[in-house]
Image 1 (cartoon, rainbow, N blue to C red):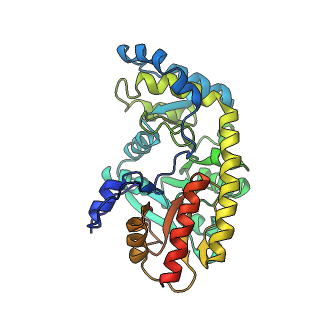
Image 2 (cartoon, rainbow, N blue to C red):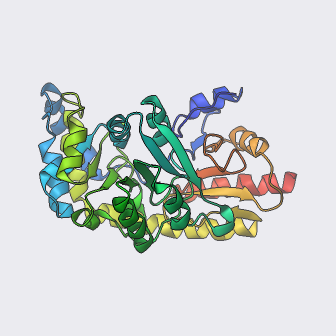
Length: 360
C-alpha cells in the first residue's frame, strides 16, 4: 500500500486505499487556515491580473524587505523559497552526504530531502508517554556525530509547542558542536502563545528559522516560504536557487499577507477556541488527543494500540478525509492527524467519530 507522503491530496489518498471519494467529503488532512485567505485577495483579484504578464523579481526583494522589517534582521539574512519545501531541499543540498539528525515524529520532507542528497540520517524519537515533549539530553548524545539538526516547532504532526528556553539550550550546545540547527516554525502563527526563536539568530550563527506564508494565509497554491539565518548561511543556500523561483503573484500577495497581522491574530484565537471544544468532546468520547497548540492534532483510541486503518476507512466512507500517519516515525498508523476546521465541519467529524464508537 503506497500512500501519499502529504495531506491535502485526498483523491490520491482515497484511491490508494482502494476506496472512492464521495461527493461532499471534507478534507481534514489539509492544515491550512480553515477560514480561507484574507479578503483583500478576492477584493483586489482583478488588479493582480496584470502581474501575470511580468517576470517576477529574481531576488523577491519585496518579500525580503517585509520579512526583514518584521523580524528585526537584515535583508541578506532572509532567503525566500517556492514554499518552505524548497528551502528544506536547499538545506539538504548544502549538507549533501553529511550527517543529519531529525527530531521525530515530524514532517517527512526533512528525511526525504536529506536522503535525496545522500545524507546520513539519524533520529531522536519523542514519546507519547511524555506528551511528545522535547528531550534535550537525548539530542545532546547525538550532536557530536551530526552536522545538521531539524526540529519542527510547533511540531507537525503532534501540534506540541516546545519551550523557547529548551530550544535555546539545544541551539547553544549545537553551536559548540559545530552543528547547524533548523527550527521549522511553519505553524507558529497559529498558536496564541507565540515564542519564536528568530531573535536568537543575533546570538547564534548556527541557527536557521524556517517559516511558511501559505499555511496561515491559505495561499498554498501560490507557494511561498522563507528562512532567516546568518548572512553566511543564507548566502550558502541562495547560491543554489534558480532564477525566478517564486512567482510574481506569490511575491506581491504574500508580502501583503505578512502585513495583515490582525488576520493572523483573529485566526489563532478562533482555532484555539475550536480546538479546545473539540478536545473536550473527543475526550468525552474516550479518544486520546495530543496536546496541540495549533490547527491540527493527533487522535488515538484510548483503549488498545492497534493500527487505525479500519477507522481511516470508516471516516472516508462517511465523508471525512483524515491524514494517515504511516510515514511518521514513531506513529506507524496507530494515530490519525486531523485539522481544526470551522465549527460546522468539526461538528460533522464529532458525529462520525461518535458513531464509530457506538459501532465498536
